Image (tube, rainbow, N blue to C red; front, side, top):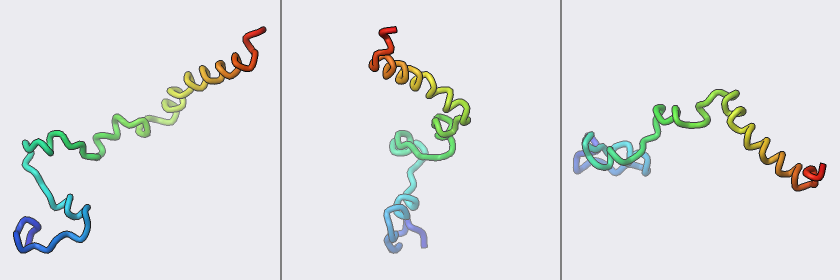
Length: 77
């Protein structure tokens, strides 16, 4: 018995219901719904090497450090 048959038992939870539900490849839900798979990790910051993550944060930390130094009177030098 498959989930698409009318006398199939109801899935026990929402995840099973979602996994049993399939659309045709050209269905609008397939074309617009983001699916979280490994292809999305290439755009994630967490997929970057550690040195690149640190290098990308350093300019922000430097600007914030200089702003605090300036606010504490360091600009009077």
